[in-house]
Each structure stands twice: as C-alpha cells, then as structure tokens.
Length: 169
Image: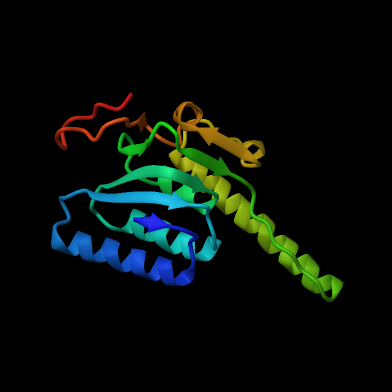
C-alpha cells in the first residue's frame, strides 16, 4: 500500500517490495493500493520506473485519493487492471516549485520544471485515453470522470470474487 505523501524513504520501500514480489513469482499480479496526496516527483518516478521494469502485472487501486504523483502511479498500472473505489478522488496538476537567487539560477529552475512537466505529460499520454498537454493542469476527477478520462479502467464497489472476475462497473 502506498499511503500518505510520496517521499524518498517511502519510494525506496515500495521499489524494494515491487522487486521482491516479482522475484517471488513474476507470473502473479502485484496489487498496489494508493491513498496519497502526491509528493516528490523523483521519488514517484523511481516507483513508476520500477513498475514498468518488473515483469509482474501490476494492478492499481485508488482508495481515498490519488493526487499528483499518486494519480500517475494509479494510471501506470496494467491496462484493464486500474481501479478506484466509488468515492475516490483523483487529481492531476502541473509540477510546481519555487526558486530564489540569481536570475540565471531561477531560469535554470524554471527550465527544469518545464522539462518535468513535459516528461509527466508524456507518461500520462502513454497510459491514459484523453490527455493533451493543456489538460495536465488542475484536473480533479471523481470515480466516473477518472474512468472517462482513462486514468482507471473500472470502479469497484466489491472485491471481485476471483482473480479472473473483472466485475468493475
């Protein structure tokens, strides 16, 4: 479970768990439950890269909220296996940051924020149905909107009775 802000320490633990579970049985799906307001982009990208790296299918579930980097990780699950619960809140927004100092330092920081924005947008575009560059700004989605947008593939009200059962509404 990815719970709370995404920080370097949480990221390291999640990466280790993903690698361990894949090593145990790479044919078994890994279930990643997310309830996170987001957090560090670099910590989140470490989790994202590991999700893409492992050969195990990764099923993602939003319980509560998946905001910012949490929504990117939710969308990065295996197509057809990305779910949220009926009252989940999913939010996408542009990266932000602050800078002070010399004008050249501020320009470097601004350039990095734009690079990260482009990177995150390209990741959303890879995993979601309807993402344009202009859409990755202040989007708050509830379950049905997240489904329509392509962040999730289903809304679960009950746990499926078996792994083969995909009774998402």
